[in-house]
Image (tube, rainbow, N blue to C red; front, side, top):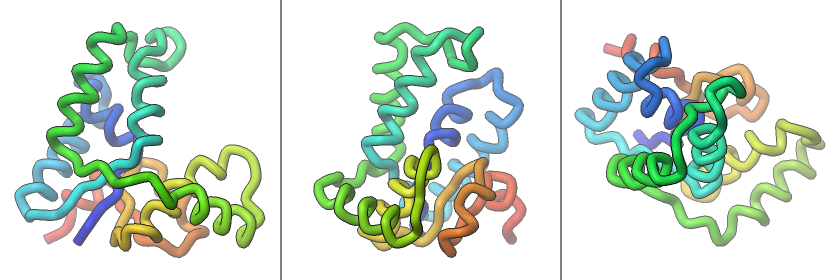
Length: 147
């Protein structure tokens, strides 16, 4: 099975202070042990940078730009980066077909990447945000609970 990994997973994986860090880390390790392909897109790395370099008082990780870049380097060793060339056209078709507006357009980009690259599931903590697309969505807790 293949997974697209959401930005919130990347943030929890790096943030060892997060209450969700251990479940995230364990789920990623389990999926890699099971030889599952874990993909990310450029947009997720950009979003990660924003959160990583934002002040802790503003719900960020408070990392320096050098530290954030090191974390991105490490993430690229774990996750497979999908090409981005046709993503806009697929995203545009989805937002128009589903009348998506506002912040939900961000989530639609992940669904577009899944459609383009035939990804089986999305790994995220925001599972409710994706139910209306009819895609398979799993949280780290659900991954860990599987036999």
